[in-house]
Length: 489
Ligand code: ADP
Ligand code: GLC
Image 1 (cartoon, rainbow, N blue to C red):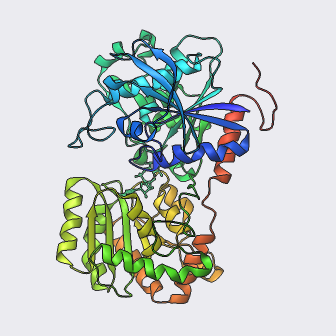
Image 2 (image 1 turned 45 degrees about the vertical axis):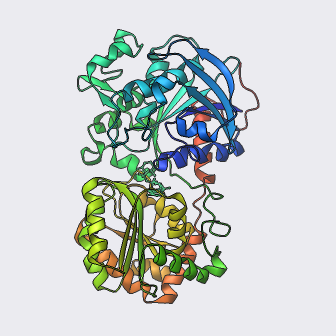
Image 3 (image 1 turned 90 degrees about the vertical axis):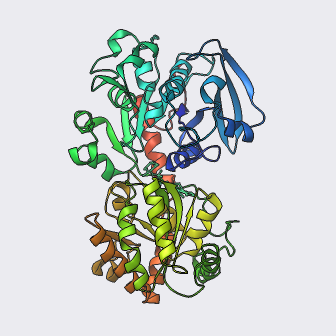
């Protein structure tokens, strides 16, 4: 059995802003079949305190980046949690990264250096007898973990895995913070945390971890190029031998169209026609005409990454083809405004809800005909996986994990009976327009469309296969093979 400490700034169902939370929330259970037990380290944010009422004290920490803290243990929704209770760092109004207006908190470097610091201390026996064999760090917020392990004391150190969920967020700060990170001076170098003269949290993780991964094979290849590497491609090319691309899955109990309480009419492959009732409910919710038009949906952060501007350029064309569009999301103010304006221009045909609504996102996947993911880059993407499972045909840009998970309905794939969605490339407004036209044509061939939906629903989007790959990776870091009976200390 291997003990893994998973370190993440968000974990579903406790606190979520995006797919990272879904992954950190679902992977532990999936790994339990593969000789791996996971504890998850998370800040005890106010939102988490509301959900986790019973937590036991593990250890008091006298001083953690400017105040006293406590490490607590709790179980919740099948997760084995370690929670950092440090009100001076985590008790803030607003979201987990920003103030109520959405602006990044100025002390985020301290808040997440503390998360990483405690993780590394756990590796040194802070909560003895517990000592993880492997620390699995997710994204920049946990990026300092491998640096703290490498430059910290201790003879027998845990192995570290750094997973990139999104290279666009790197945690880059000025050099002046270095002296407060509790790292030795030699860590401020190219082989450590130094990055373009400042401190790079994600860079540190990528530099110092024993192994690296990202969330799809295609993104693992893309980030080694200047186009997608966001300045880190050189380092990633050097470390290509340690970089793995492992596809995300989804939690099939949280996302089960057959028992989903958010749907008006739950359905299975054999009863997929029941989706029509959910469609009416979506149309009603978004103020759309309740007719049989092809209904497209977007459930997304409304950002440049997600190609929402490309969609905005196509909305009127989509409406002129007789289609409808329902948009749920929030993000960049200009893109929110563009989607709201599209709805105002096209009453009854386009509806936009600005906000975050987990329950409505389920209904949209279970009731709309197709889910749009026109991302400029997409490390993995979960909405298209959820779309597959819910018979909501994914229309996606051919990039990252979207390229790896959807089989485009080209003539050959349709003839061979393997298509599960529509892909387009290059990622431009024109190519998206072509994809939307293709989708509407296919929608009007109910047999072909129905086959695509059912095929998608039968596609394996579970964690099974990928959890096994993670387990093998942890085992290989420790020089073991899965099934080895004993921990060696
Ligand atoms: P990312 O993590 O880049 O935002 P993913 O596709 O990996 O993209 O994951 C997004 C997750 O967040 C999915 O579970 C999706 O359903 C959810 N989501 C995104 N926006 C919203 C929203 N406005 N309301 C509800 N769920 C949302
Ligand atoms: C990031 C990526 C997304 C991925 C998610 C979970 O937020 O943008 O593509 O699915 O992390 O790995």
